[in-house]
Length: 373
Image 1 (cartoon, rainbow, N blue to C red):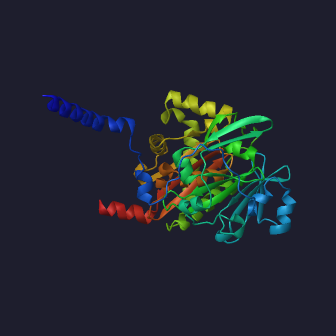
Image 2 (tube, helix red, strand yellow):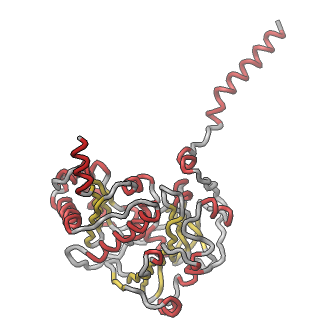
Image 3 (cartoon, rainbow, N blue to C red):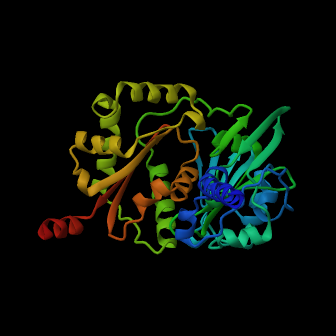
């Protein structure tokens, strides 16, 4: 009898332990990373380390004239509605580079070019390559203007938008394409610009609001073309066909933009209209307003465009259009809208701090679709 009771006791311990193991030791879900065959960055709360400053990082916070001395005059200079001057370099797409200049000093550099100035990073490398060079950290605590800030990266941030700190107290965001898992751009920026754009969770401290300036009415064709070029650069790097641009696609984008602003009640719920208005008032990255996919489909219907043959995005306020595009391509939700293999047209309507992107099937594709039905 004693042996039986002892056996029964051991049996119950084994059974209960087996059932309770998943509760106390849950399995981690890493299917998304496994699908891409990528190394998952380990989530560590250790104090971050700063890597030696090199290349483009050395120019952040320096006089813009120093950059010109080294790299020459930009192809184009444009004053933005956010108060910084945008410099564009690169006749060839492979040399494309953007520099943000504020108060005659460089606040940000967005490198989409495979240059030695991005070392130790290189366009096309994998996250696993970066992990062999340095630790990917999840928490960054620093001070700016005698105020303490604490930034936290989520798992997807660490895998597709990791933050790197340099020993000159500047930062870099590595943007990995969500489709290929390869590095598509490196954005170098100072603390103020990081706290303005802030693509991560801010645990401590207040965001730097976007500057409120008198902004001219109408559409900004120069910025629209810049956005289209950046999107096509990222598409081609992924091995996907570039979008085509024509007058009709641009007019359709502007038509949708006007439809949303004039007939928002046909697209948004009352609560969402309140959120949109709050975003306009606050003008920070934290209160950014973006149409959901369902809302964009309603917008297409309100604008009398075939929602089966079009998709797109609308967001505001936009501080840096190229930064926004890089964020889209590193995000699983938005990247899927750009990942089509078919030829499509693109239209971009940019006005003040608002941006609408319209992606439409080409006429040839539409005809083929109709014939197959």
